[in-house]
Amino acid sequence: MNESPLCKIREINKAIAEYETIIVRDYGLSLNEGMLLCCLSEKGTISSSDIAKALGLTCSNTSKVIKSVESKNLIRRYMSDEDKRSMLFSITSEGEKKMRQLLSDTENIPDALKKILNY
Image 1 (cartoon, helix red, strand yellow):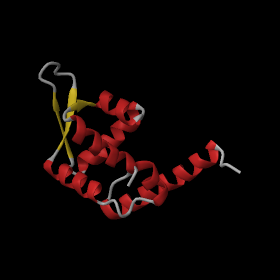
Image 2 (cartoon, one colour):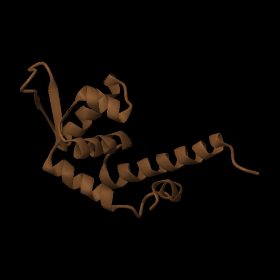
Image 3 (cartoon, one colour):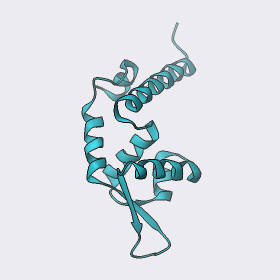
């Protein structure tokens, strides 16, 4: 019998939770913090509303993730030249280093995610 989509999603969700446990343990980052670094690494400098859209988070949750990653000196904030009311964010060299570590660590990705990610 084929597994239902819901059962497959359950397995994916468990694998994502397992992966988050690993990156918290090994890198001191939550999954959302890692995804924020990934987003800034790919997009360069962006606003908090663009971060929220990219990560699929509420503005409130995005603010918490930004503050946490910022306190670890992995990102920096500054005012936009065009709009002094707008804050922009970019990844620091320490954040880029952490991102490279995360990207190179394919060994700790759970098998269920490796299949989806084609690792």
